[in-house]
Amino acid sequence: MPVFGRTKKDVLSEFRRSELLIAARAVFGRKGFHDASIEEIADMAEVAKGTVYLYYKSKRDLYMEALRFGVETLNKELKERAEAPGSCLETLRVLTETKIAFFEENRDFFRIYYSELGKLPTHPSAIAMVRDLYIEQTKVFERVLREGMRRREVRNLDVEKMAFAIADLTRGIATQRLLGTSKTRLGDDVDFVLSFIWKGIAR
Image: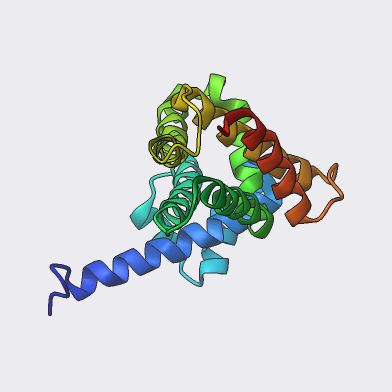
């Protein structure tokens, strides 16, 4: 019987695809693209190897979809947090902590994200995907900044450039923590980012 326009088969297919992507993120994150195998991913997802190929034509397709799945998950969480009541400063703090904590909690995914960004010049097909998802994320920060300007909490500024700056700064801090070069608590890193940003944009 259809459920909200979807059949039982659709629901099962969506669940199976999600399980494969979660397994792919873990295996790729641990072993890298070249050393990871479809067999390992299938084993972790508890499906037959042939089942993987029902959903993805190649290991490369699965790799890129795992990347997309991870960034979309983060973007969805950021959008939900941005809609909660609060001042511009409070919302920026929540978004900053959410993004850094996401990478902290999903280190396997972050390794995919970080390594793929470094390879983009040699993978033109990946550029558009990562770029669009990245811009989608900056739009979340942009909307928060525009609302802050409307409330006169934030001075007049180029919100698009500032949104990109915030997105880059938060990713940089997350990278430091992943590489182990930041030994401070998560809250301290969030405080640093907010202090740096707010001094430049507050009225």
